[in-house]
Length: 378
Length: 172
Image (cartoon, rainbow over all chains, first blue to last red; front, side):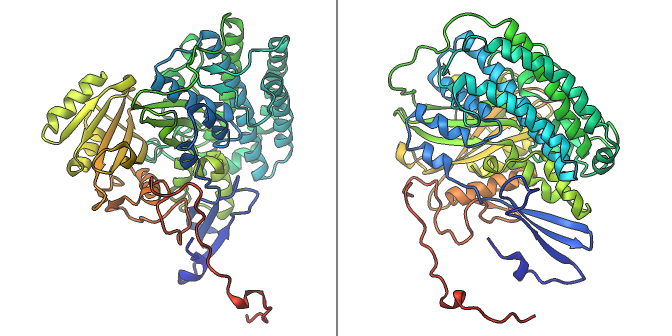
């Protein structure tokens, strides 16, 4: 890492300020080198790679099913999606069908996971701005979700639940009712959350018109997921390139509309996440109602040996398109796995979007993009 | 547009550069010569029928253990939010001259993808504004996703300077 603090000449009264890699508001080990004219930033250059573990290299030495636990570590706040994307890519490569019940279970756990991830996302954003209580409300609800998923698969964060060909466990008795009970209490709690922070004037003033990313820039930088939708681009893989059981469900794609300021500002990205949680609740209810009976795992050979070729599997993760490009050379280990994660692009836009912002607003920008370090570095 | 129509359109437009094409497992893929890389990606971005506005991914592949020539390939995944279609473009890159043109002027987001591909495979992108390592340390000496890089290799650490532990008075 070049030492920007020493190398760059500090001229014209510009100040070079280092933020991170150990900083509570960078959401993981990311470092930003800020060039500022007083309180106003000229740019904030992100330096990433502190969490690079070479997951893609490790994949090349492991049999196909053994890589699933590693995918948990790609995104530890929404590990279901990371499992799901990889499983989908390998299933496409093998050309196998997944039982309907397994697809429904995948959707249910994915959407539960999306709620958990967004609760952290919006809660942490509020906390970065200075409101601590909403974060605790988010953590409290997420704890219930962790309990539900723990009962299902034994793990609270790194699930290893969605496997190649299906899922690892069926619903235990009574879990259906527990999820319904959670959803029943969650919806009124979201109203409370909205009253507490979403329409809070301090939050609105800190976020509205800050770090505006217009639709063209967002697309050009390859933003995906809530960040792209916050800029008003109507794009959701669940609806537009449907996979798994999503075509069976009705839900809205939430878009930024310039709710309290400009289209594509930090507040729009915040609101999109809040609204998406309510859409997830809808999807889970429909999936629980229509949960079909049957197997939870497709018929797989003992040793997975896909034909030579390549496949791309992508899911709409809590941070947008999470895609796995898997290349097979006909053996039981993947020849190459490339993981495409939403946070990578979201971090790359920081240099552009931070121009002219106040230094204190950099925290708002990073939090509104909801980046997560292991997904950037892999 | 359907996948076979996309492939036909690009094959017609760049007929002398198309090496092969397939739709294995429904992923439409075209392999082209790297001479037309910038042209074909620019065409995919601007043509109203294609309108690939999202560059989903750029990745490198080291094909040496697959027995394919040339050694490397650069893979582009594109998606169109308007037409809702996907496309994969592959460009083989030889080992002795691992250079391809940069597409940062077509999609700004290509910047970091190209830096990652350079970092992991040593493929250079001509015209990139800031082609530096991104995930590994800048003093790192190899390209770790190449197949000849052992998975368990630890990079040599620089010796600690002898005077680093001696306390020196701070000079403002």
